[in-house]
Image 1 (cartoon, rainbow, N blue to C red):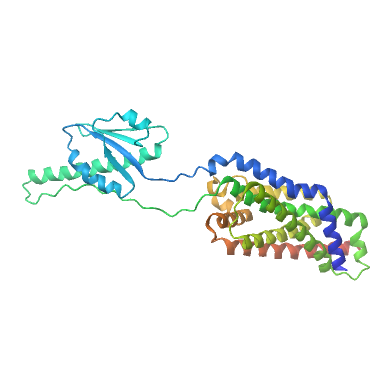
Image 2: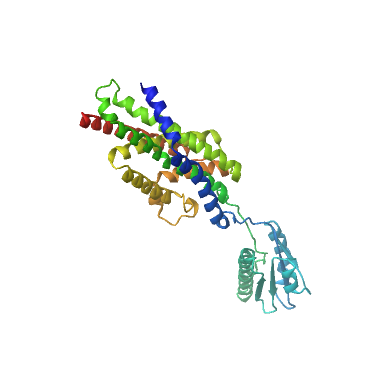
Length: 371
């Protein structure tokens, strides 16, 4: 009996055309729209490479003798300092022979010239030259003070040092990869609407009343909806997953763990949907409330604005299960692993257990009321 019930319910869910459109077409359209809308933000990760800084020193400047050793220090840090005594700075910048040009005057002041698309390089150059002038002036002041005070050991003026350190940061996915991943999960959770086909059929056929005269337990009745709904959701999102990869070339990382998490999401969505549709007699109310809850959780968890650039308080973001789902799956894509895997899986298992228990208890109450 449970097997026949599961088979019939699965057929009802997979035959619903509007549910198939929601689960197959909507994810593909949404991925395309949002990936295009946020392409500039996510695809513009800046990568710093070696760049050249041109400079000119007027006669009489006290900094000239210090620039040669300073060149060697900068070169070790991917900054090439090259002197252009007679070069036209505008020509050099327009031809991109240099990224930035520094004009050092005889009064030991300096002016930095840059083109509009070299703001980052100009900021770095300003920082290192400011540090350069500060250290040289500091050493000079100390030297002058030592002579005035008749100190025999006058400190040597050394070239200032420039040190760079590469910080390890998480890579940023492309907009297509990001939204191509998170919306498979988002629509897997929306898949709870697959239950509508079964709930409508049950209410028309007065299934709860018939259960009183059958030998079908409440647990079997629950599994008769839970298992086919899980399978229907997983099959539908797997099809959307495959189509999105073929159409948009989305890069998933750990396929096996991603599939496992997607299957657990399908189970959680089914368990939550059963509770929701048992709670309200009006199917429309259940659908609207389900989508509202999913939208709010998705908004907090990075389904619309990315979790990397979210402006919401982290305490709110971490309340959403989508945060852990999205972060885990996206990190699989860009890093191949995620430190959030255990949290994500445990969260899903906990949700499945809690909603399943509530669902069975609610079915038991409905059955008693029907009797």
